[in-house]
Image (cartoon, rainbow, N blue to C red; front, side, top):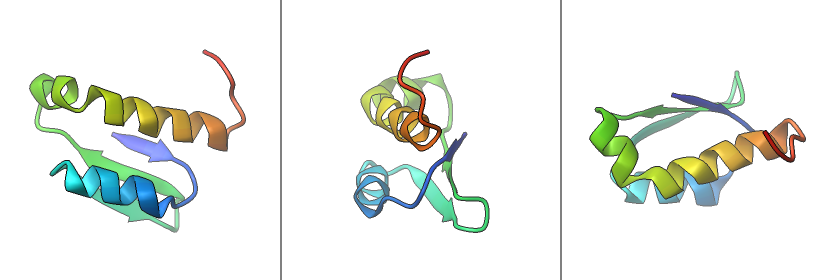
Length: 64
């Protein structure tokens, strides 16, 4: 998955600490996060929601 946002060091640390493969691509201003399946998603759902929130903030979206 990709989350487009500015680099947020605290978020990067949280993702890495959770054991998730993550890279921030500064050229595209996005995080590339690799999950191995639905179980990974369910395990880290709160953290993924935080990433989505950061992307929504980046695009100035308050609600879906």
